[in-house]
Image 1 (tube, rainbow, N blue to C red):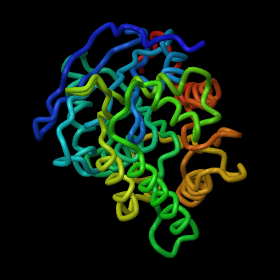
Image 2 (cartoon, rainbow, N blue to C red):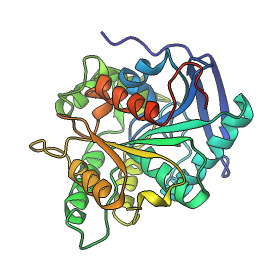
Image 3 (cartoon, rainbow, N blue to C red):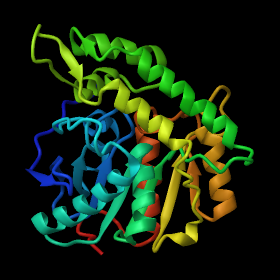
Amino acid sequence: MLQSVPSPHQTFDLAMRDGAQIHVRRHGNPDGARLFVSHGNGFAINGYLPFWELLLDDFDLVIFDMRNHGMNTPTGADGHHYAQMAQDMESIFVGVNNELGAKPSTGVFHSMSARAAMKHAIEFGWRWRALALYDPPNVPLPGHDHYEPMCVFERKLVDFAMSRPNRFKDPQELAANYAKGGRNWVPGAHLAMADAVLRPGEDNGDFVLTCQRELEASIYLAAMTLNLWPAGEEFGGPVKLIGADPDMQRGPATGPANRALCLENGYEYEAIPGTGHLLQIEKPVECAAALTGFLEEIGITGQGAAR
């Protein structure tokens, strides 16, 4: 049975350049190698507990939600785009090191946060010891074999986001919604994610999405014109893409697209068999093993390994 989110050792808020606040939580082993961990569009990092709880004993975890998500106070549409999110990555990285002390750090990001981290690393410079990116839904340039399948994928997500209500009577209602499409999530993950993405409404005793559906949809739309299909050599250090199963029947377009990105552009790559886009809450043990194996290859071994 999935445990509740543990109490963090430390919390603090960081101001972004436009004034938005990001609520940071520190979990795990302060003597371990530091990992920054964040989530995909419309979700929240506490909902990924089945994955990151496996890292608590060995790693110093910096857990945070992207703007307008999770435990952050919503700030609306201004700044809700990838250019600002890449800037946020810089502000968060610098702010955490100022607050906790500088330490070599690895970014562990899924989907939207993975794409923001890629943009940040290319445009702001390499800040990380390494990056482990889970199924970033990058869209290649028009004319590429995977351009149209990825655009279809993003358009379907726009429709999904816009068809979902912003208000729910309780988290169980949203959990039931998640269960319809997330049949492969581990037990307890549907309610955990619902708890993570909702906040109490200001009236009627209901619950509202922290990331409103219109903002979620805007990020899916932005993907199609982001032109983010970089070569591995554009990064200043080791990067591993950990993707959805590219051969799974009726699997997401991200699986084959990420395999193509890695084969064409020289990334270390591993697909997790039998998983879709939410791979970290479908097969968390395998996803954690893919991460720790990568870290061990580059000399990061968990407890006390802040190299």
